[in-house]
Every structure is written in structure tokens, then in C-alpha cells.
Image (tube, rainbow, N blue to C red; front, side, top):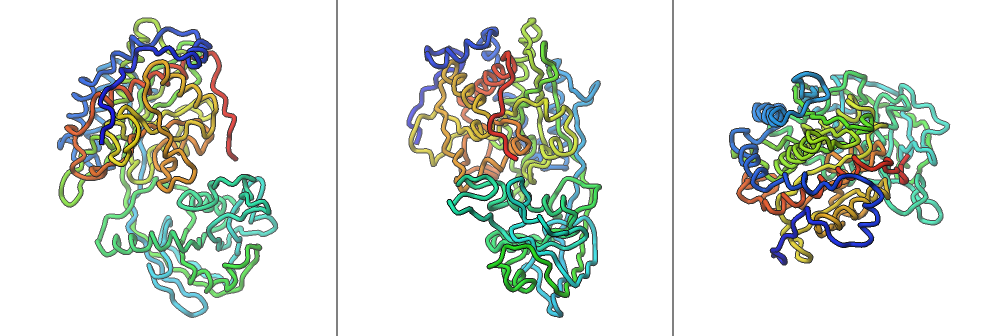
Length: 519
């Protein structure tokens, strides 16, 4: 139900005393004139093209995605906005690898355990054979500044067994942070990734990760994928030695170490373990699209605006055009870039540089943004001031029954920088008057949206972020996510909010402070 059908146009300043005080700290030109170039008509025109059948659902590495990156490039060229990569080169090549569901034959002390019943292969770089008479049990598999399960045990060249979760101290706080909020080590996919990196950093050749909950979710999916003959999942191609990673259930864990559930102390366990992995891969090429407006006074400092250019291709034989996900974010970035370019053309260019980053492979696991931050950042991450990430801003959440129609969910604004959060609030109060909804910003949100879009790859590197999001709807990842269902007045207002926030960040005298950095 839409409780408010009146939009307060973004661009007319309000009379909020608190926001005016904050905004007066920065002596810049009034950006309203440039924000007004962001219009629903232009957004609609681009989106009807970008989310049409012509682009075949923009599946990563497929023909439709290639057409999509060419379209984005053509828009920036028409605006006279260059790329940081060189003359006419707007594409950052992202080498990917498609891996079919790998299977492992595993024998523990003479007994063979079955694929999908007790173990699945999450990561491997090649076919391999491993045999050992001992493994290193490292408890929770955590390696942080305040707490390490690797202290006092040498795991170089060894197979490591770790279990899920994070212990708490006597006050009920998590040991790595001393706080009661979950950390990157506690649960879920983020924990899995963090513990894999810890095992790799300590020289292990394989990680056996025991998580009954994740296994119960992943195993049926992997089994269906294997049975369907699916092409397999995509990942960023890694030319370095890759850690073999197995996700196992408690039955498997106890076969290796009978006290695995009770004990967290590191120890070397004597066992006869044989692992044989069959892995089939093929190379897939994809691209991020980068456009750039150089700053006038502090060009070395970068404001990143990001959105993912891909979607899921086909669903049950029908094209999924992804108008909201994330056609809305894609066209929003182009409109924001046009506004900043107009300002620069008139001699009012931003003090800091702006990078418009359209990333590939978001739907496959945040691959394009991961490649940018972890493998080939075009600009040093230490010079990156913030990332404003747009992923679905053209619709309304049907489950949101309270509050105005003119809203946006904000996620992450206060996680790393108090400055960023306060600036975001002040900008909105002065220019846009959206209802800023922090419903999904809760650390305990079961949807875990903070970890599910491209901003996260910046946030994990202590770069402040804001994720702009309208919530999901019945058309999410379906052929029915079409441009005729976009609410273009909302898309315009939300896009202007991102522009105003970027303008403020790019023109402030002082760079925002990261006062909540994580380890």
C-alpha cells in the first residue's frame, strides 16, 4: 500500500537549522542547478533501452552483457566523459573462471564419505590428490589481532580443520571485538570467507570447514546443480595457488576429530585421510566499465559511485531484463555523471575526482567489485574516500506498510564513518526530503544486505560506504522486472540524493574521517 503519493522534489532546499549548519561548513556552489539535469524523462529513456530484450538479461560473460557494456561506454563518450584507463578504453577486463560442481572422493580411516551427504567442494583450482596421516585442528579457525586459533601451531603445508562460530568472553562479548555485535568471524558466508583467508595466510594447503547450518543450505543446491548439468558457478580467476576448501557437516567433522564440537584448543590429530578431487573449469571474460571526472583541487582523492551492470539472463526460458535490478542503478550513475560533467564544463568542477564504476558479475558473487578492490584497483584504495553504491532504486517495497512512499533504505552509512552518516542526513534534509529508512542497517538483519552488494568489497577495506536500496519485490529476479513498473519520479529523487551526497563529499575542504575502522 502506498501511504503517500506526493513527492517532494529533490533540489529545493529545506529550512532545517541543523542541516544548514553542517552544510555551511563547506563553501561550494549551490548544486541544485546541476541536480535538476537529472530527470525522470532521461532516466526512463535510457532504462527502456537498457532493460529491453536486446540485452538478453545481461548475464555475465554472455552476449547480452557485452552489448550492455558497449551501451554504457557509448553514453559516457556522448557526454564527453573519459575513462581513467586511457584513450577510448573504458573496460577493465575481469578474467573469470567457470567451475562445474567439483566432486571429491574422501576416505577417512578406510571409510568413504559421500558427496553432498557429508561434504561439498567449495573451492579448488585444479584436480588434485592429497593423502595425510595427520591434520591440524584449529578450533574456530580465527586469526585476528585480539584472538588467534593459529597461535602456537604450525599449519604450513597441512590440511586444516576448523568449525563455525566465534567464542565469547566472560561478559558475553565476541572475543575478536569485545562487543556483542557479530563480527566477520561469527557466522555465515562472511565468516566462511574470513576463515579461508586465515588458513591461506598461515600456509595451509586445504581447509575443511565444519558448519552444519551452512552445509544444510548449500549441499542440496550443489547436488541439484551437479544433477542438472549446469555450466557451473563463476569466480574471479586466480593464477596463484588456490586453497582447497571443503564444507562439511558434523558427521564428517567428528570422523576426523571425535571431540570437534566440545574442544576449541588447537591440536594435531592423527588420522588417515585421502582426498581426490575432480574439477572442470573454463575461462570466461567479462568487463567492468569505468568513467572518470578529474578533481580540480584534490584529484588524487577519489569518490567512487558504483552500480552493477549485469543481471541473471534467462529464467525458465524467459529473458529477465532486470529493470530495477540493477538497470535503475546503471542509468542513475550515467545521469549523475552528466550533472557533474555539466558543472565541470561551466568551470565548477568538483574538488575531488569521481569514478563511475559499473561492475560486472554482481549476481555471481560480487565478482567485478571484488576484482577492482582485491586484484586491480585503478586508484589506490587508501586514496578512495567513499563508495556510494546503487542497487535497485526504482520501485517500492510491498512489505513496507509504514512510512512515506518517498523513501530509500540506507545501509552502511554509519558503519565506518560518523562524518559520512551525518553528511548523508544533512544533504537529504536540505535538498531531497526522502524518508531515510535504516531498517536493513541492523547488524542482526537476517537478510544481511550489508554483505550482498558491491559496496561491501569497499567496506571490507575500511572505505566508508552507503548502499542505496528500495527493497525487493515479487518481480525480483523474474522476467517481470520490466521498465514499465519503475516509478520514475522516485527514481529521479533518489538519484538526485546520491548526486547531492557525492557533491558534498567531493567538495568538502576536509576528507571525511574513518573513525570506526575494523581490523
